Length: 266
Image (tube, rainbow, N blue to C red; front, top):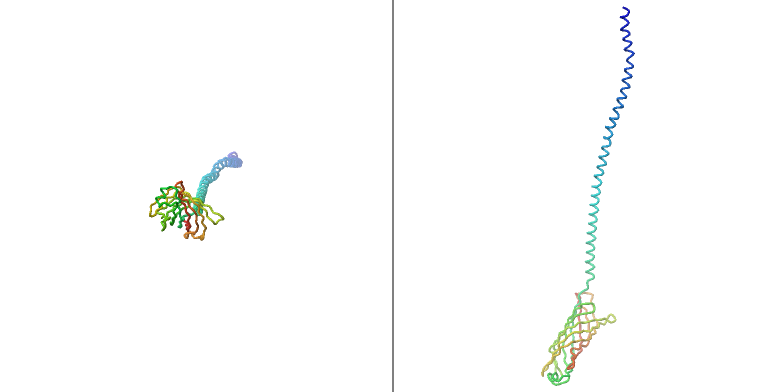
């Protein structure tokens, strides 16, 4: 009987003694499980933390070319605008410079009263006009010219008959010519020209007529009496000179003239 009562008490003591050991094993197993779980959690959370950074880097990398492209486009647009504006300014400047540098066109016209002498050596010419050795004539000479170069002009001349009477007189029935006129200026005032060209002169009186066609040359001196700053108002010059209309072995036809000239700037 005494043995049966002691067995339950011993079993209870054995159970009480084993409880701390089981608690210690459970406590030591919990940190081990936590330690094993921690690397897994850390491995799982590290890529998650790195992913936003990688995404941000990728976004920055994607945004950088776009920003660079936008900046390049803006720079190109600014450069194009600057080039266009500078080109238009250059064109406008060139146009204004060309307009300012353009020389006006110089035209002139004049009227002279001319005295002419025909000295004859050939008998047929003397007989045609009445037998005298020389005949005098006068006429109005008109002329129109254009300046091709600063000191060279082209000039056309045309004569209009004036009345002549007397035994040694003849009418200038026809007179016309074309001349190249080199011109120089003395003392910035006096204009000197030397026309060289061709002329046709026909003299006629009651006895008959004679024609003279040949190279012609002369010398003129003209002085300005009015110089206008307005391009619509012509300058005015007066002058005179001498002209040889014909020079040959059979005759010599020459004369003197004086008149007025108007210069136009177009």
